[in-house]
Image 1 (cartoon, rainbow, N blue to C red):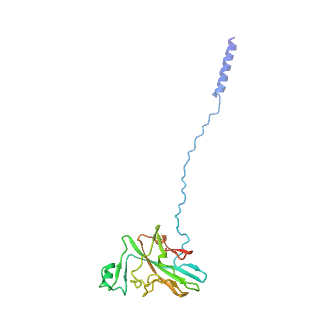
Image 2: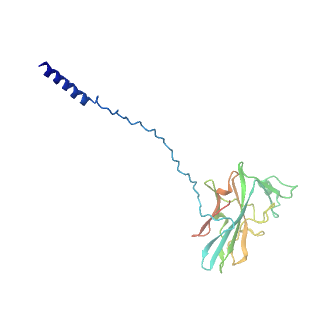
Image 3: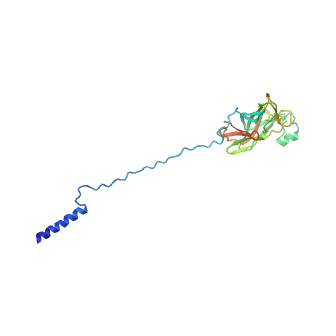
Length: 227
């Protein structure tokens, strides 16, 4: 009886050991977590170009149609912190005093200064009739300078006879001796209109991000990049 009891107890122990996993000869493998590295992907930044198809200096823009066609070119620019000007017909001391102090020693030359932080930008233009009939010239007010997200209108000189020191041209659309701007251009190369327009803009401007824009007529416009 004791033998049967002993065998029974031994069998129970063996059964318990088998199901408890204690008899397993293979060690339990616990996977080691692999450390992950987070890589920050930086998308390339692109600077928006406001006028990707802007013309370069000395490139022409056409306007009009049929026999009435013209071409406008921005031929160059110049930067002047100040400039001196005179007018042969501007001799009244009262008129001189209205613009600045009388200049007896300099015989009528006047110094033009911009506001603090600004400079003068001279933009040189040329307009030519390339058709067979008379065309209207784009007005000076149709040209604006764009820089740093702002638009600047031209500043007119004091009169059609104004001569600016070291500048050979006159204001665009002016012919010396005429009070009124030229409105029409006859066909031919010899009748083209050339001159400058003056803009007062921030002195910190960059030519590479500065443009001259113009509505040449009701359906044609153009933009030139200075640099």
